[in-house]
Structures are given as structure tokens and as C-alpha cells.
Length: 348
Ligand SMILES: [Zn+2]
Image 1: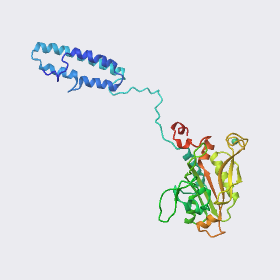
Image 2: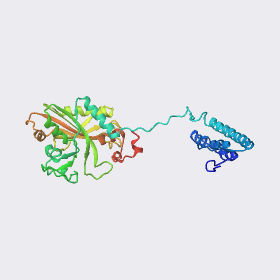
Image 3: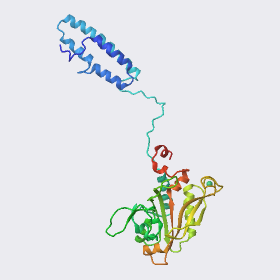
Image 4: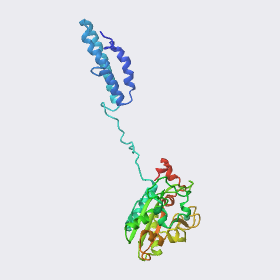
């Protein structure tokens, strides 16, 4: 007889080995494994013991060993049945407590900047504005020159702009766009007024990062060009867009502001939605929140676009999406947007 093939000829040893195991199994899978170790046709230990009985030559001995093996078999099968019942009935069945709440899988969701951007784009789309996305990598003529920002202007300074080390055959320098206004002249060159468009997107500044400054942030540029476009239409549009976004009836206040590509230029403030203009920490107790830069498009911009002089008027505005998101959600540090801290992002 080969002890390698029949490892355990004394069936009582199987009882000692398997009964405690069967009593301890905690899952249906564990029980299945024990069952397999005992009863598998080829490798199960009990199956091998039973199979070996036929090799016993003495009939009396074979009868005695066979009876002993059957007692062990019955005991083990009873133990397996008890364990199966304890674990929930039949083999393979999983105990289910239907009263427990389901495990909800974590789902992805939009970033707060994307939420605000999408909402803004939807508002302008509903007012029949075309939506364009532009190049983030831009030549300095579309980013500066055509927008009436001459080479001597401080905005072109290395401290504010990321210049790229690319060599172009036309000799133009390339930059990471500092504003979404880079699309203004590009789109004006491609179509004649009337023109109504917004350009949402990512912009870059060579800034020292702190609670209110980031090197990468999001803007939404907008412009309207036609005959007889006025500042009154600009304030009406801003009020409509901001009231819809902030779900409140906000007022718009214009203060003089300087941007080379508009004349006159304005800083537009929005009445504080947190305190309804009474004064709070968000509005620094002024009742107004600085919202965006805007103005009437400078004649030099129309000239760069190839429009005949004196024919068209228009306004342009640039909304800082990060700042708007901070106001909408009460966020006090711009750096949170880019940190990708899931604990923070999961709130939105
Ligand atoms: Zn306030």
C-alpha cells in the first residue's frame, strides 16, 4: 500500500483533524474548501480512505475497516450538514440580511469649477451666445498685440506670463494664454457682426500662489459686437447672468477700470448675496463683491479684426470662474480648487 497516495488510513484520525475545522468555518466558501479536502473524488482524504478498502485482501478485516470508515463518514457528513445549516442552508447560498442598508458605490462627480462654468455657459447659450474653446498655447499677437497690449505693457512681463521656448518659422513668441480674450480677435477675423460669443477655459499667470492667487485658473470671456451696442446693454446682460447664476436679484455696479482692450473699461461689482447688501465678511462689509472686468471694445481691437473703422461697437467682459465659485459656495481659499483633496471635493 502506498502511503503517499493514501495519507491517512485510520479514519478516526480524519475525525480528529476535520471535526474542529468544520465547527470553526465562518463562511460558505470556507465550508466548501473543507468539503473538497474531504470528499473530492480524486484528492479528498475521506474519498481516498474509502477507495483503499477494496485493496484489503482479508475479507473479515475489510468488513471491519469498512464499517469503521462508514461511521466516520456519517459523522463527518452530519457535521458538514450542521455547518451548512448554520451558514444559511445549502452550499453556495450566501446569508443575506435584507434589512441592512445597501453598500452605495462611490460615484465620480463634477469639480466645483466645472459646475459653475457649465452653469454660466448654459445661461449664455440660452441667450443665443455661441460657445468657443480656444488654444491654451497661444502666439503673443492674439494674446497681447491684437488686444491693444503693446510690447511695453507690464502684462507682458515675464513675472506675469509663462513664455514658451518654442521656435516658430514666423518668429512669433508663444505663451500660455493669460486670459481667454485670446479668442476675441481670432473669432472676429472669421465672421462679421452681429457677434455674440463666450469662451470658457483655463488661463495661466506666473503668480506667487496664495489664498487669493493661483498660477492656473478659469475664466469665461464674453463679447457682443453689432451696431449701436451700449453700456446699458452690458449692465443688463451682466445683471441677468449673475442673478440667474446666484439665484438672487443682484444689482451691478460699474467702477472705472483699466484694461487695454476696452475703452471705457470697468470693474463690475455685484451686490453681495450673502448679506443682501447689508455688509458681511464675504463683501468686506461694503455690500459689494468685485466680480469681473469689462468695457466697450477698443477701436484698435476692431482694427486688428479687420472691421471697417467706426462701423461697429461692442462690449467685452471676463468673468473669473474661480472667484465666482468661491462666492457661490463660500470658499475662502483659491488653492483648494487645485489641491485635489478628495475630502474637500466630495462636498460638491
Ligand atoms: Zn456681504
